[in-house]
Image (cartoon, rainbow, N blue to C red):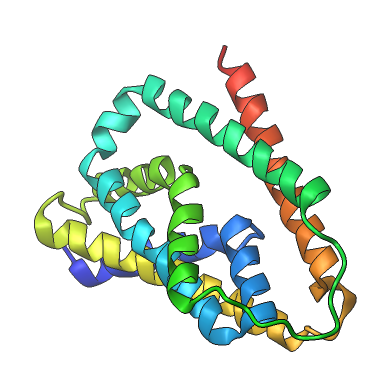
Length: 209
């Protein structure tokens, strides 16, 4: 078992999976723009803290999850409801007007850490995804489900996710003067993304009936 190779493959797959616009990376970018880079990093660290557990669960129960599709179906239904509610919030409930003056933000850096933990925890898609990737690596003889192999995989997945989130924060900081980075645009974009995820999830659930 090549631990370095396991780390690299896990890093790369998770990094690429986190790059498409999603709830976590768009929220990280939004917080970084509106509240400062440090709080965006704290949010990302909170999200990645949960990813450690998600990747660990995925590797430990990889074979179980793939042999019991009913578990994945339950996760899909839960995710469908959650993402539909989040989409409704950002499209119709979240405030769309921006304040020119800077208000005192009473939320602490620690609260953003827990905010990241919460959003990452309700995003159940990484568990079956990580399980699939782990089994794929294991089928190539690269990964053994021992402590060192699991640690290498989890470290790679967590690092890949954090780097992708950080890139989003840097990218949106570069284009912060454009309309796409406005509060209204960010809310609509997050709402559109979560709505699209909910629709795709619903179609997958209906297709499996």
